[in-house]
Image (cartoon, helix red, strand yellow):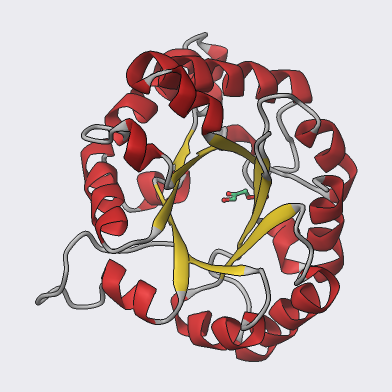
Amino acid sequence: MRQKFIAGNWKMFTNAAEAERLATAIVLAAGNQTKVQIALCPPFPYLGIVAKAIQGSRVALGAQNLYPAKEGAFTGEVSPAMLADVGCRFVIVGHSERRQYFSESDSFINRKTHAALAAGLKVILCIGETLKEREDGYFKQVVDFHLSAGLVGIDAAKLADITISYEPVWAIGTGKNATPEQAQEAHQFIRHRVAQLLGQPAADKLTIQYGGSVKPDNAASLLSQPDVDGALVGGASLKADQFLAIVQAGS
Ligand code: 13P
């Protein structure tokens, strides 16, 4: 039985005071529960504040990005070792916003995945199709490409430190979530492809989150699908009560 994994991607929102308040409220309400794995992914400047707020709880810290090098003259970038150093256990790679606004390629995303794993971080690898790709009828090809390109050089043992997050681009920040059936179809396909690539036991253990307009009122039906193992939550993760309701839905 796979444990549900609910992560909050705060994107470029909050300030220091809000980050502390939000993390503290989540820890107070759900910091010790064992049913659901929770991770919070604040902006870089607030990692330390959130690390302190969640200290001693079961809530984990995650980052939203990294640069795939140990160290070096890369002005403005952050290494995986730095993230681990400030307490991160997870890092998000392959988010559609980074693919779209920062032209990140699948091979660059793959390098990030390897760099993160080498530093002892767990990876949340985001994949998913655009509306046009879905309407044109080839969402599975896109998902398959993101998946297989993202997992180049990853063996079954390393997959244990990777969560796949299926985030259809048309559902992100639009209020238009995938239906539970659409999410299940995509997740089942992802698990099937991972089984072909890395074997059934690894695929059976793989956590596959859904992301895209997850809210308290749709979380339970999405999370009740057999292959939906959690959620990567954007907007609703910025409100403690909404995020906690989603965690509750996964419990
Ligand atoms: P929303 O929940 O705001 O649609 O964002 C989803 C997302 O991009 C999480 O990474």
